[in-house]
Image (tube, helix red, strand yellow):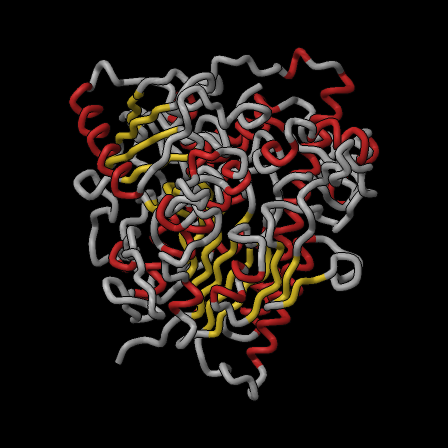
Length: 598
């Protein structure tokens, strides 16, 4: 007799760095996620990879295929200013619709007849009722449609109109929907409002509805998404939460990166050799200088440290909200038959990715005129701060760079998987990575932090895994709901996690994995990764890195291993053709104006 299909809970943090959780070596307090990671039947994943920005990742999560196929080949915020993504009739080219398209069968559609599905939190896959979660068959939904929003639902007074009479620039509008209803942000949203708390309130509301014996789906397994907007800018948190971290970051971001590397080692996530190999990689890909901590005035350092304190408080508040969900599932005896998967959607954010294309370069002026970013006010509803590239690169340790970059700092994310019926003692879990030299020693505190898996995984693998555990086939090559659909590109993780195989799902001999966004390109096969970052952000040539010993991508081996690089470039060509990559026009810098180092 086959075991019952598990419940599914996918929790996505927004712009969280690889080392931002306690169980990933951080000083930030995350006791609930730490507790989840340490449970029997849980594992921390050190090689979970996403796209380098949020909406492409979310399209891959829900479709099980590449974002260039699923509709987010480029972020919608960028495509609106570029005609290269349009066909001769002015319509968006396939894969570049800017929404989760109909060429894919989305997760809630595939589970609509067997599970009860709901989502609470950020959507970022369409801004209209026709492209909303409800339209993609979520049974219940409560979502912020755009890519960001004020965490307190604060909106400054509208600016005066432009000289031509058109509305003046405003920040991304607070577009919320519940099911098929567009919500009025002034009348329909809860008061007081804080994003992490409200999203969990709504998640629990939908959960309790399903628990009622009279609910038509009461006896079904369920699949739900809890998609936070924390800790995405604007960095905002309760002053009492911020106070916990007062003074914690006064030594600056480079000292924090050093501490994070040590924490990653002590929690069993990197070998001792990475403490040195990942230390000095911050400027490897940029020809633009970053302002150093020592160059800042005391008041500038105080403001920067306060921004980081606020960021940390947001992460802790999100963890507290997650704890409410986990506690409820434990009280109801549901947790042990629930696959809980926690991850970030991309690397930590060092710039203002979604805002810059919308503002015509006037965003910082808009902030100065409409928000109070004095030291005493940072983190409150009427403040608007972000923490910059150096703090972000502390958060992405041991990697280089951050969100929007195709380096590991942009695409390697913290992840935790919990599902006791699946995780086997026969699975290839190590307490620490294989040491790159005989002198490396295991970390001192590996046992209390739980199991670790160092196998390469992608966000595309989650949907195939869920279908596998639910004994549901993917409908390709048949039509689905009277439309042709694309196949899955992700692979089920079940054989690996159950211990049926000791080899990795994505090993050196399997199909290579490709990435592209903002013109940055990468392809990986096993331990080897080739990277192409165009000017002015990068060197505009292919580089080669051995990630097993060089997670910070600091030692280019292109000249030493030409045959390895040649094969990877051939792999890239295949990937580019299969998914239909449209590269930006030569000379276009989609990482300018705050996207990349400055």
